[in-house]
Image (cartoon, rainbow, N blue to C red; front, side, top):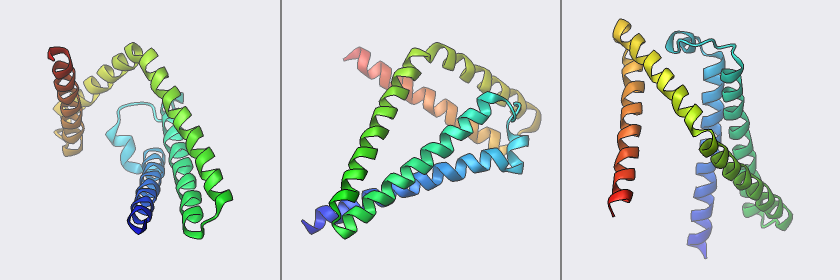
Length: 156
């Protein structure tokens, strides 16, 4: 039983770190001076602000849920664990809804990603920035992985 408790505590700690990371990323994107030079987009656009807010709100919710779960587990508090279970259920429902919406709008999102990639690539050709090279490499690796998984599933 002790091993299960340690594993659960470690999972909650990772959940807290991911939540904190999402909040930090959202804040850096919104207020960081480097963000203006890194992206060639209007940082006051509704799309950018909505994306940043989604990152921050998701991070805060993850952090809150993990802290409540951690307190409930450490204090053997059934009410805190009940709140944790309820919040975790709500988060799972929100993630499923987001996945369904992403699938429904995948054509529009893929067009936006192509435009974003083209913008970063054009900037990279002009500046040869290492940060933009990393972004392009991440995109290429994600596309390569997606095609590898898709090819594996279609050929079996």
